[in-house]
Structures are given as structure tokens and as C-alpha cells.
Image (cartoon, rainbow, N blue to C red; front, side, top):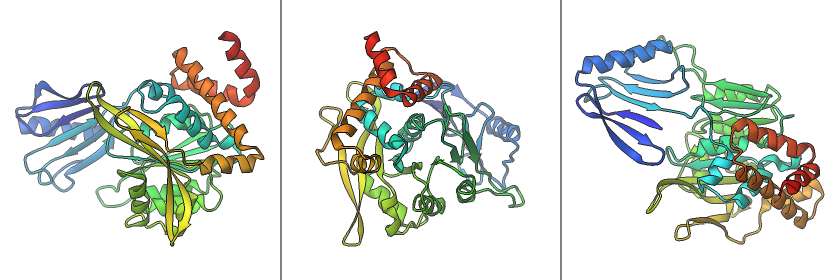
Length: 374
């Protein structure tokens, strides 16, 4: 996942998805050699790194994300970090197989994201660095119906959606003269003018949060984004404080916070788990209230229902004119589709997308087909 170089004379480290941090026998002995390689990378992407501009954050031609520093920013010499992305992105089937979440929880979130085509939920995927929140958001983006228009906004392109009507927008840093910068906020504002059905923000961390919530509060349902935080409550706190400054009165436009963490499992090593799903319940004493509907049980290594009724289910039922029991049946049907894909090892991003869209076209016919196979 990551290639990390701390300084010359020290070994290159590799962070592996299964084995964690690994030391290699590769090292740069000369500072000039390492700096030359960093400058070469910068030129390949049309950027410059020197003493006046000692920081580099860019995307390489293969899609990898590179971050480099040189003196005077880094006191011990040049540093280099490369984040490698999978050519074939993980899908919901992969995430289920990795035990990041169960099929039942995945089916519930599928319903929340799609909203029966009537009331899709606004969801933020939260967690620490490298916990897999963007990967999980990307996997759930596959549940957006293909008739809908998606605008994605990122600092560094990571998302890979099996969607025909997908517009990708990416920020741009200022040039050496300090001109030409395109910020996340610029792109979110522009996206709202592009007749989006969905807005997906790679990482919410600044003024774009306010713009995004303005969109949510003016009828743009089904927005998704990621944010760095440690709990659902902290997510709301971060949103309402600087530099995001979302007014508390706007927070109820958010339907759910999905918390994901990277955890060291005694037997499995480094694993990623969804540890909490909380819904926004409105206000109490002038503060946004959260209701935790799923919580991770460390002893059982399982995400378990807290027994608290889901507002998302009720909202979708009300908008669709359905009973709560019908919503539960729909979740079970979607769980059956996910189990069918898992059993047949269907995990290619395009294949998963095709199955999802086929289910939308005629759920009853699709379920009969997979039942006949069983």
C-alpha cells in the first residue's frame, strides 16, 4: 500500500495490506541521488520541488500518490512517501470477505445509499489515516443507480466507480507564482451548478464542508464524503468547528456517520473494521443528537446492532409509502444478492456494478433467477 523513505542511509519501508510495516534491503546512500529521483518525479507531473518550494504532493501517471519533502522543510534530508492504489479497486464483496462488515450491515447501507431511488441518505465515512474509509465509500458508490449523475471531487484521484454518468473533478495547487489554484471549495461550488444527482467528496476538511452541507440542505440528497476523526461524535464536532465551520443547525441534513478503523487483530494481524454506525437524530438542548445503531464488539470481532431503531429505515419507508416490515424484507433481499455474489466470487468492480443495476431493473425477476440457481 505504501512505500516510505525516511532519509538517506536508512532502509526503505513498505506497508503491506496483510503484513503491516515491512523493512526492505533497499536504501539510498547519497542524498543527491534521492533528491534527483524526487525532482524527476516532480517533472513527470509538471511540478517543481526546490528550496523555495520544498514540498511535493502529487499524483503519478500510474495513479499513485506521491508526497516528498526536501530541505529546508525536512531537517534530515529528502523524504519520500508513495501511496499505491489497486488497479482493480476493492468492491463490496471484497470488503465483506475481509470481514470489514457483515452482509446484513452491507445490505442496510446499500438501502441507505440508494434510498429506493426516492430518498438516498447523506453519509460520511470517517476514520483515521489509512483505515480504508475511501475504499469503503468507493465500494458503496457502486450502489448509485446508473441513471443518476455523479460528480466526484478529490485532492488526489482515488475513486473508481462503475458508472456511465460520472464526472471527475480534481483540485490543483497554485503554480510557482502563486496563481491558478483550484480548491475543494471551488469544485464543490461548481459541482452544485452541474445538475448533480450525487456529490462525492474524497476528503472533507475545509470550507468545502459548508458548501457541501448547503447542498444537502437544498435538496441534494445522497451526498457522500470522508473525514478524519475517531468517533461519530468527534465527526460532528469537527464539522462544526474551524476550519469547516458548518452551522449546527445544518448538521441534521447528514443522515449517518460510518466509522472505520485499522485494528491489530491478535490472530489476523492488521485488519480494517467498521466499528460504529450512527444516525443524526435532530436536536436536543440546541445540539445535534446522534443515535448509535451499530457498535463493534471487540471480543467477538463483530459489528452488532444496538437495538436502537433506525431513522433511515423509517424515513425511506415514509417516503416510499411502505411499512417497516417491507423495508426489512427489502434489506433481506439485498443481503441475498450480496451473498449470491460472494458465493460466486463476483468481485470485479464492473461485474458488481452490472449485478446491482440488473437488480434495480427488475428485483423480482433477478431474485427468482438466483433462487433457481440455488
